[in-house]
Image 1 (cartoon, helix red, strand yellow):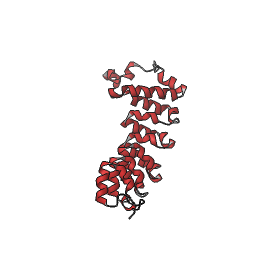
Image 2 (cartoon, helix red, strand yellow):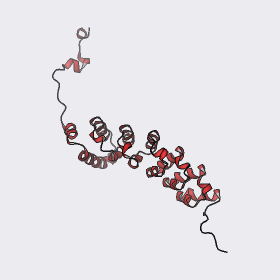
Image 3 (cartoon, one colour):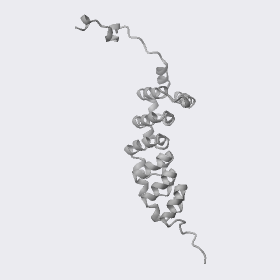
Length: 205
């Protein structure tokens, strides 16, 4: 008797759970009903974030499921429903779970200073994904420079230097000149004003 090749391979929940614990992509061969099972999908995406591709539409807009997926693989944000992948507040949470989500979201968010700095604070290497508009923002560039040059893990030094080189080539010349120019001294500020600790009691009264 011929078998129906269109039948899903996994229709039994326990069998599927055992399979996705080893390979999240096994969700692809699950019945439609099991793809709607939140617990099943959570197990799948925790093992392989991109298994989110095979979850039901409803679960691809479930914040807990999508966060579990992007924590395992930042690219999984591309498989999330638009309700989440274009939601600023959710993306902040997603970046908290995995800062590399920044490299897989739209320009609108890669030009959002708060979102980009949140990612960079967790992992400075994500600054490679910053949008061009932010690189025209002097205040943002100064904050980015501080992140890239403060308390850097020695293991990341070479990668950080490469990113600095790339960003310097993308930053407008006016801002590059500002970053590399010395801070001018202000002769109008007296030593006592600059350092209140040196003031005498009579000067303070």
